[in-house]
Amino acid sequence: MAADGTPYQKERNIKDNEELFVKDMMDIGHHICDPELVKAFVSASGREHDWMLKNSGIKPTTVMINAGMSVPRSHQYKASEVTMFYYNYAKKNGAKILTGVKAEHLLWDNDK
Image (cartoon, helix red, strand yellow):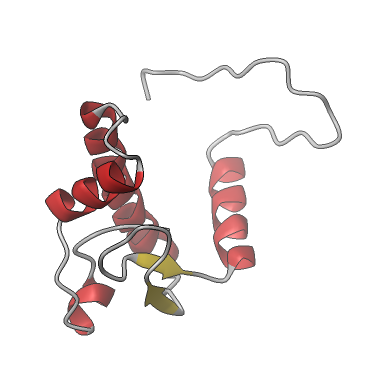
């Protein structure tokens, strides 16, 4: 999970911020990406990462550099722990989990 300015980066003296993350994303995309969309993605990534940490208690196993990053910002987690956290959170909050069925469209409530 890529996020900037996290406690795990700070503990390792990794200097990172949204501007650098956006720059890295634009560079790896050869500057053909929509800058506003990239900024929105970077901002949402940080908020989601912070929310997950606060609500799950799961800690990354490491922070590393991946695809086009200029600093380590890829937070590695045990996939099964993250998957089960989101699964349990969704069920607890009323999501109906269906398996073995074809998805034809997605519905959501924007008011929540």
